[in-house]
Image (spheres, rainbow, N blue to C red):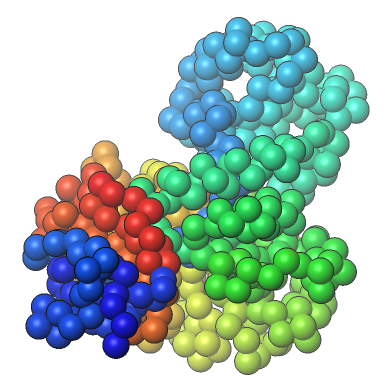
Length: 480
């Protein structure tokens, strides 16, 4: 057997050759393939895990978010001050962008008034995105850029956001490519070696540009959004091939909005808001696209947060059986629908990290009974459903340990408890981030090592745990 390129001497010993796992065993098993040029890294008693996958992410927005105003947790007054500070450093007429506000933290009921932003930015167009990305807050200058008359609503949600965004300039290809590069570096620092990206076709273009430059260091699966699917079908034969690195693997269909904006579609009315949220698509319109994708051999990934949206997702998936469909988010699932995930072979792609910020809102918006039933991860796993974890970055932070903490405690970092019994052990939670279930010879050498085993730590220490070593395709991409 040829010499290994790299050997990780931990639990177990892992030998790597040509970017793949060559052998797994103990010291005496691998001594024969350690050559004079083999790099051997002594990990002591540290365990070698498969690399982690963020099963729901937005790479380009994550990279861009680092350059925008972070409005997380701000009141309306604090947000105005933050915008005013950015205005001072920005030429007049240039966009000022921010992200992360919630109606609860702002302390101002929707619809948000334009006057607050106009007072601090009369000469700059301002676009502020909500924490869940399902609402925006604009000033008059921004509305004018899109041709909206004076007095137009400054607070927009759901479909209106897409309509408005088409009226303004987008980031350049170079800016989007740089954003992916930045996000990739950040992901490595948390042990993430693979992602399921839910972006726009222009984001896919940026990822392909990285591929052409031989700079992709993540295994990227990409879903095409509903309104762009026909465009993708036209360019599909011309897509640059990056086997094992970049592929389109799904159609993304939005069925509702989000909890924070009170637009998640529910079977029963909200406790603190009239109505049952936002139904994003007519059934027949969604069904037509789901069946079209199925004929192309492409599964559908349904954005569904409320229980009405989840039920609709399962109904649509049943009309196109035999494909690995997914429900993205699945925060609230009616008890009658939980077993359907198993029966229909539908994955639940869940982001437990959402409960770190959603818990107070969830209790207000849905009440304790529905709060207790939300994020039913343990129930789904006990039933035998396929469950995977992600972050929804930049909506939440990409650090997987925040999700592990949330899934094992149902508790926010501030100590607010989400009622219910849907917790799972630390090791089980971490495994739901694995890019592949276990270490097997022949698989890509995407690996992560922690200085201490997560399940041995106090759960309160998990959010601060970082990898000591991350390997992608046999290449060390991060040292802690």
